[in-house]
Image (cartoon, rainbow, N blue to C red; front, side):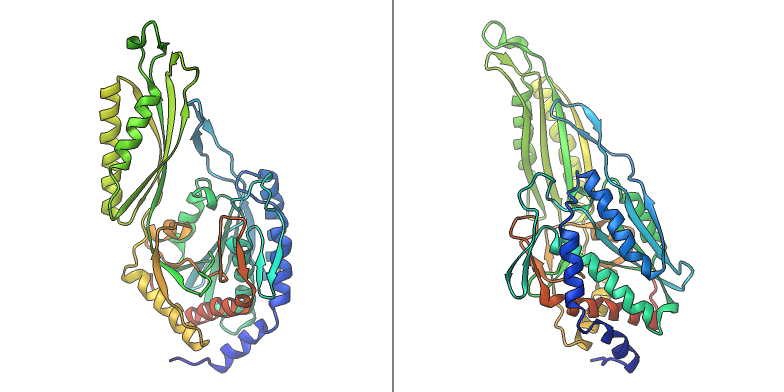
Length: 405
């Protein structure tokens, strides 16, 4: 067990009693609707966060989202807009650089009924984004505030990326995340830990796909044989894709758009599905399976199929590179009297993308919380000071000992 040095203990004392200020910040941020498709709300949230991070003294810039597209219900490819991202950098020439990431968007649209916070008990705050992850962003700021006031600050540089589209797989911020990851030595992402403090270990990957199926219309009574039923082909494709599932790959056909009057053979349909591979081999098998299923369905139904999408979140195995950072976090927890454990999950986040660049990253450094992506989302308020100390101590230990990528 490594105990706290006097300098570490002195620096961490700044967090004592910080809970009310952190909660006030989180509740104010949660009151701003910043659903992934609410561009006006995201712009306002970016303004608020930029002002909050100014006192840390880094260089702040807005980064426009990279171009992205989607397939609409008619099967046409359309441009898809995302909000700006915040990128904050301090001491880029330091010998060790850490990347800290969080997302300002939530899954709750501007017209969603879940828009306000309420206390379930003295330590449990229910509200949109309080855990996922405006609480995590508050901890990034708190940990960096402690670092900057410590005697270790000059030995470590940092970059913060607060993106606007994490909840929709980060299509507009992926280039920014990859570029920052390649410059840094290690990464910390502030998704919420589980209510008992457990962290996410290995993560499955995730891919979202759409298949636009183009058939041929015909009268369902007079000449159905002349038609090519796109809806039927989409259903066949869904079944073939579902059959690819296994222990290391989940497949979820989620929606079919298309069809029309009962007396017309439908000439267009769009199938949407998600796949979650637990290894690179499973991802390769899924990609091959998609190609084979599409070719078979196109031949069997005499239709044309255009597939849109990709594995935007590669699998994140808990390999030796990742394990050493988990071990550091666990050691810091031990110094603080916290038992830090982790377990594998099928959930995904920006940690998948960062790890794919070769960066070691622990991606559940945020507060304890749960029921995310639902109106029952909650934040364990008694974890705020605890997790701020943990993140700050990790930063100070890296500053003192260095880190080789």
